[in-house]
Amino acid sequence: MCDSQNGEKDRTEETSRALRDMVETGAVVTDNGRHVIHCLTVIGQIEGHYALPGDNKTTKYEHVLPQLVAIEESRDVEGLLILLNTVGGDVEAGLAIAEMISGMRKPTVSLVLGGGHSIGVPLAVSAKRSFIAPSATMTIHPVRTTGLVLGVSQAFRYFQRMQQRITRFVAEHSHLSEERFTQLCHSTDELTTDMGTVLDGNDAVREGLIDSLGSLGDAIEALYAMIDESKRNGE
Image (tube, rainbow, N blue to C red; front, side):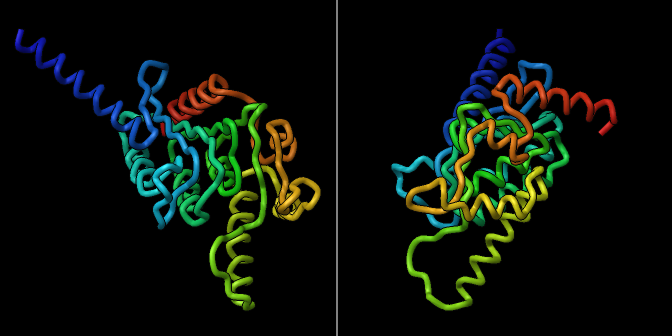
C-alpha cells in the first residue's frame, strides 16, 4: 500500500513538473510515441538583453539556451522538434539560439506555424530539416533598430556586418544563396512602409529557404525517421 502511494505521489510530482515547465518555458517532452522527443516552442518576440513589457508574448533566450544544452546531453531525449510562430526580436539572442540548434548532434526538425519572421528565419533554417505550413508566412528584411542611432559611418558599417552574419547563416543552412537572400531583403515591391519580402509556405519552399511543406504529423514523422537512421548508424 505504501509503495503504491509513493508511486502515485512520484507520478503526480512528475506531472506537475512537466506542466510547470510547459507553462514557464513552452517546452514539453513526449514519450508516448515511437521515440522520446523534446518539443520547444519559439513564440511571440524573442527577448534579448532587455526585458520586454509584461503584456508581450516572449521567448526568453536565457530559458532556451540551457534547455538546448540539457537536450543535447540527455540520455533519454532522442530528438528535438522546434515549433515557430514568432515575429522576430533581438538579433543577437535569435542568432545565439540558432547557432546552438545548428550545432546539435541530435536530430532536429523545425516547423513554422503562423509566422517565422525577421530573426525567426535563421531559427527556422537552423534545424537539420525544416517544414512550413502552407498558411504560414516568413518576412525577410534588413536589420533594423529602434532608439537613437548616430549618423556616422561606423554605425552603418555595424549594421552591415550584422546583416552579413544573418545572410551568411541563412545561406549556409538552407538552399537559398546569399545573393538571392539579399535581393529578397532589399525588395521594395512587397511592403508598403518598408523594404523586404513576405513569403508564404509555397514561396519559402520554392525559394529553397525551407525544405518542405507540411504540418505537425509530417515534422514528427521526419524526426522519427532521422532518429531511426541515427540509431542504425550507431550515433
